[in-house]
Picture 1 (tube, rainbow, N blue to C red):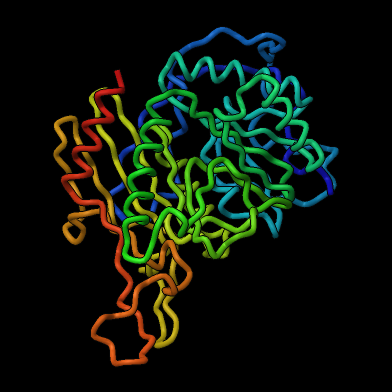
Picture 2 (cartoon, one colour):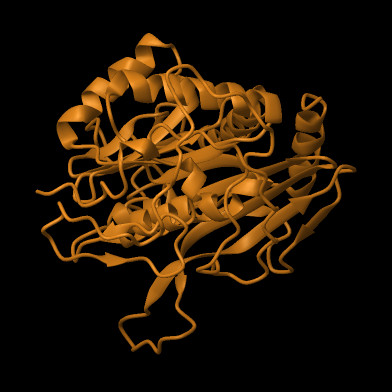
Length: 382
């Protein structure tokens, strides 16, 4: 398989060009826009060791003579990512939102790890995360990259998404405590609610952290997630994921949510994205799931669906919440976590010998709980 993502030259890998970005606008519809403001990297930083400024970057869309395979490009993409007929649309979309300045050509695992280490330092100074697109990464290099990140003790601060068909790797950097604490605190709240359901406990589910799903030819690491205890295999997809970012990576987080919902063959039922703004303090929560496609007509037996969100909660620095009128509380359907109803106790009023269980209960995080949780998180932001 030709390295179809390996456009440009090795000078691309030597470029380290910090850039200020504008903040994307908050979406008002249930589906994200195809276009996006590039991801942020607002703080200027010095060039990390072993990296040099390139003299001249290749123009977007420059064809490469060594690429024998016909490819197309993503229209409007900052990175001009080629794709193939079998390429993941979700991966291609995420790639198209990553700015050229955050796109590099793979050289060695050691150099890449040192580059990532330098970008993590920049993220710590700025308080923002960012996404990197690495082109020309063959499948056999992934284990070497993992080891190199582990050696520098930065693997926990990097989340990887890989597509072997494109030979491209996306690394999401979320290195600071507010992001980790916010995601961890919210995920713990979900765990507590699930364990408190009648007939359930903390043995009713498995948690997944930065496990990579599902493996070749594609793979992705998330922040926090869980799956029912019936999914016992290590590579079984999570049913629910929580992803955390800042306001300047909102569009990329939304594209991440689409990846989980589509690439998992709908085994991931809900992705909750949490977007943090520090000045002034605010948190936006979006609950992504497969929703009816407003542009397609359904039939009696089938309703076309696409990734999107209906539930959203904007929590300001005083704890006041703006939300969809239909959802005062954050509601997670029981079936978005569990594959069957076997753990639900039988209805007490059911006829003798009947096996019908009660209706499945929803997992609900109350309006006031969301407000109190956000205010608690804000106290640790400064």
